[in-house]
Image 1: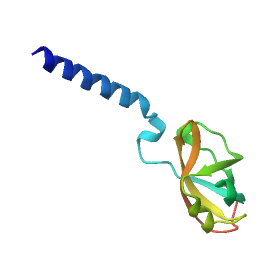
Image 2: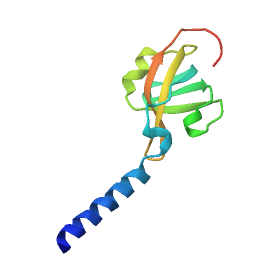
Image 3: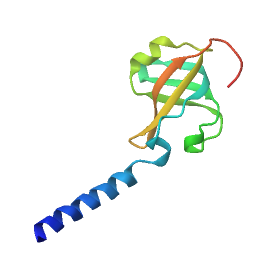
Length: 109
């Protein structure tokens, strides 16, 4: 009985730690954000985007560089392209996990 209680306690602690480790902003389907490519730095695996607000992380619209989770994403984009993207927190850094070209050279985000 004591061993079974210890296993239940371990399980409950594991659930609590897991729940705390997943920020609410990223627990559901990733938010797609509109933006425009300003610069592509394939050598560093980064893209600078002028983007609209990212509501899931309470970030205002701005222009900033992001790392990408897969450098091959950068082959599909060039400066001035309109994109939709999603971000995730990876080792305390925002990283683009999805990057899709929308309509090139259209209106601002």
